[in-house]
Image (cartoon, rainbow, N blue to C red):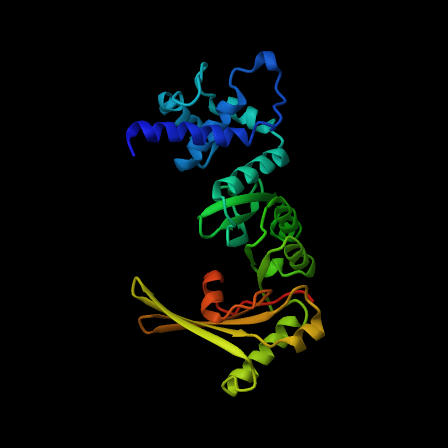
Length: 322
């Protein structure tokens, strides 16, 4: 590809990006607009790709890379300052912006995201010492294969993730994908929503909510004690080494769980997964066991890679409301 071809391609991609935001309302007075909204959006995209994390970062990049930005739009008045940019962004409708953003990412990926990891995080640098504002929590949907955030919903605190997850899923085109969610998202309504949108789920279980996790763990422990001779299972073991650590991960999928479904009636439930991890670092050995429920019927070597590798804790995670 020549340099000219690359430039033409970049202009085309810019046009596609902005086309998805053409219906985004601009509530500023038309006669007083110094910085057209499409120029602000283009600046935000360029800054995000360059690793900008704050409004100040975006403003600095605009000043430093103005000539680059003018390859795509006029930027007659340059780029907005930190304060001006903050005012412009404050006037945007966040819900409308989110719809436009999700539409663009869906078009960009062109195909099913395959595995979409939904997770809640506290935004870095969003909290300060006591007396300052509370930290910002967001629930994000991340396309694992494309390594792209598909959408985000801001929540008041971590406990509100259970409300934000359905709202985020409603925005996304997830048909044909596999949605993975940590324990807070293990709710019947969320499982049903995923099934209704013609997708599949892998939901983590946690031990402090209801009896589903307890039933799953008891069954798995009993079957493991007799080498799974009374259960229909598939297994897969992987070994990874990095920075002097060795992690062995064994995924066991229980395929015949009609008894569990009879007792708990979970939407679309087809299999139960046990993930046993052992991590060696010198003389230190840590072990952890996690459990999941899923609407998939895949065997372990196909299902295992879809389950996110999460951080280690002193106690095993797992649990889910029933």
